[in-house]
Image 1 (cartoon, one colour):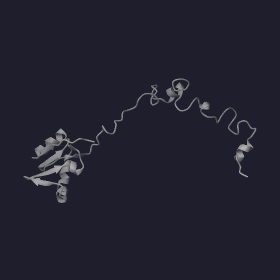
Image 2: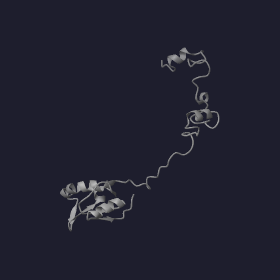
Image 3: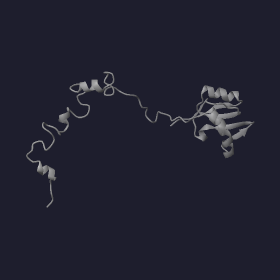
Image 4: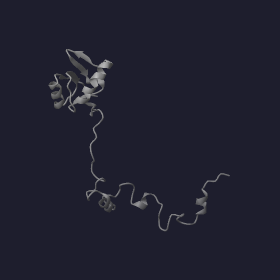
Length: 156
């Protein structure tokens, strides 16, 4: 015959608390003053003051931060001018860079980058096609005898 109850339950019949202490323990959410954050403005306010940050109620109350919806935010993939200068020889060997009038022509979008930053130094004359470039990057490339050409791209 199939046993419908665990042995412990049968054993504890008639004991009132079934092994859960003297007074009313092991109940549902009624024993703890409500589920979750219920009562933080009422009967659990002392918990908010005790565990919240400096009596303000944080992190229990208020809005915290802002997250842009994915269609609005753009994933930036930057590269520094110094890193670009180091990559020119490798890219030329791979055929990803062409030479026009003694200047190397580089399209950053084809390389997987969408922003040119001004970190490092460059001494090669290059023509760089990029959607966005910082002011220092443009100055360094022009000082080396190159130029930056901004291309317009619809970001998705």
